[in-house]
Length: 110
Length: 432
Image (cartoon, rainbow over all chains, first blue to last red; front, top):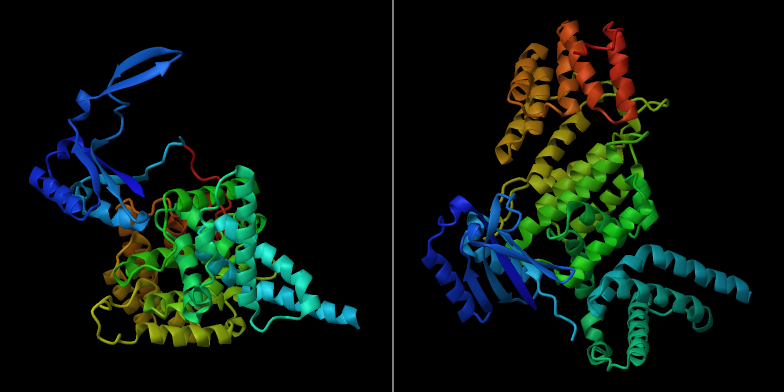
């Protein structure tokens, strides 16, 4: 089963976790066969939101940036079940500073 | 005569339903991997028993028969569905393998009940959902009964349960007993749910009656089951705590439904059987643990609170209570995990040991920090200390604050009675 681990952090803490730790975490998961993909993201000011309403594309600056924590990166992992996914999420270094949202991936109907 | 025999069989089945339906369900959830399918299969199995047993006799091992029947009913209904959908019944093979050993082994069957408890109390579910699901699946209460106990509309509660089951399925919360390393944290979550249910029954946070005993009784039942299946000191501590509190149930209210404080209770009405069982459990929970790698946790908070309740239970009267021991136990509790509520209780115990003048500054310090300013019992405690010190005006102000915060009818009547006693007829207070 696939889970997406979304890493949320406060902006000023984005660099609180050294990159090399995150790289090591990704490599560990890859070696264990659990990593499908992982990336860190640029800060939220660089974000653009796209919506299509009544066939018209609307482009706006950022998401609703009221929340203190922003999406800082993600890990797409393969895990046996939620408990297994929680164990992986707990090892993601930014979990110490921010939070990691674990979401099961929904298989799209063909 | 045949009628009498079939009546007896029917009675047997009714008894079995009460005693075994949760066990059968717990095993079917494991075998079928789905709560709803398991529940349907369980009911189908009991229905089949009602048809077949009067004719064929009661099987030697009724529970195994029910599990087996439920499993085959589920396979049948999946095959039917598969035919309608025009799809192959992929899961059939896995289901149809007749690995009797996998589900008839007594240890696995006992584990199923633990699996059910740990899954219903999984921390990935909301606290409300954990409580609702535990009462529904572990205790077998109906959705209507749970809704009534929590004073909420049945559809709201039903939806809560549906969502929780949906999350178990879609996020794939596994149906398993946690491994040793995860056990303490996961057990905490189970204990918290049981204690929440107990307290909702023992000191209902709203509504006309202070005790909704059914909930307390269910909590004690699950607590007992947990101790039986997993005799961890924390589980024993919680069961002891619930039993010792529940032993005073009859004494907590008079015939008119008014609250009676601990010191004024008729101790002859305390349930001695529950006290004896609770006290034995406290002693077991607090006994030194055999040395082992995992068991490094000291006495848990439930066991310490139970020890406090046991000291009260042993005392012939409020005045003859060993308050020194109680203050000491609160000190231990503070070290295990300080919280403003624990500190408040300790302050009250100090006031009982050393007099109200010693307790009041402690209560004022807690309120002064801004902690518990919206906690009715903190103001009620302060009011009581002021009253005993003859500071009527301060007492009145605090009783009024407590009164404004309470949602319980018996508590409201108690506080109003106290206000009348100290001669505060102008209950209006100052309204600026």
